[in-house]
Length: 109
Image (tube, rainbow, N blue to C red; front, top):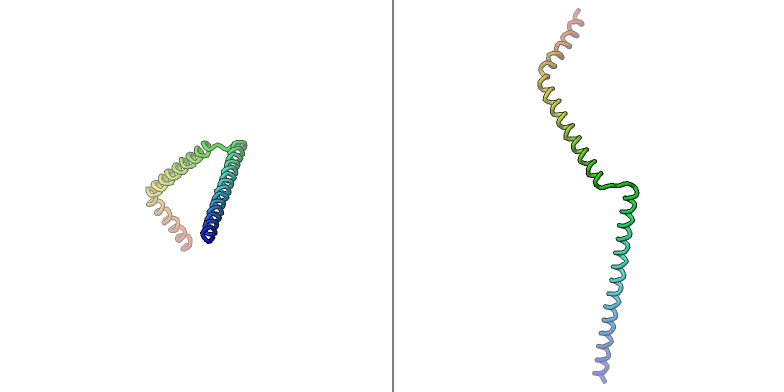
């Protein structure tokens, strides 16, 4: 009798474990399918909205390249101005000295 009870308990636990594993698998499949469906809907909705609003990824890349080119041009212009100012700097210092010299001469008179 004890052996039959042991066999019954083992079978009961086996079936409970099997049922739990099956239910877990079913829940995982349902959740996975739901997740994939939601992600696909969001992706399709987003791409549709972007298409209807006029978004074009190629134009964004083209705009980025244009801005980058403009910044490079500005950097080049600034370097050219710096070079020209370095050439003119001694003359500007003399002019500044003369301006102060004229002010001092007026105050002495």
